[in-house]
Image (cartoon, rainbow over all chains, first blue to last red; front, side, top):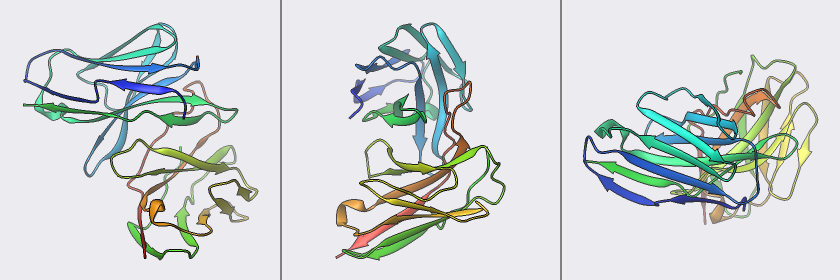
Length: 112
Length: 113
């Protein structure tokens, strides 16, 4: 257990509405990540952070923004949700000398 | 990061060893082999990783061939709770991206009674 929580765990929202997902960690790790998982695509990296206010894009970043104002929180925002963003979202942190990643429980987002 | 190839699915009898293969023929000298698994509806779980020597921990063993072009994850006594999708990932141990992972499709392991 790497002390990672995600909120909310489930959310249903309408197309065009903004949505923010939160990832919270309790162990002060530097690196944090947001992935999405869809059938047939496995896990794909959306954005990651390598410190407070330091973020970068992953392979599927279009339509998403992130913020990290505190070490413990990494927020993922969908400015205007679309049906293609219906997915399961996982947050992760890196720890250990080899930067193994540890994942949160996931957030299931449905955009109708 | 090098691409990996894994079988789509495998079966294993409960109590027997599960041997999951992975091909990574384009692996570079500074790239490690990592294994993760994902039990249904849960987040992925780190299992083990290695560079060129065989590795063992409380969960599994990792056997890497001498030429490093393939590896095998071994679960010595598979249980029903080991039913999951297993991902083999190759990447540099440390980079300025903090170890970004690229997941393939993985192997769906079914452990049967």
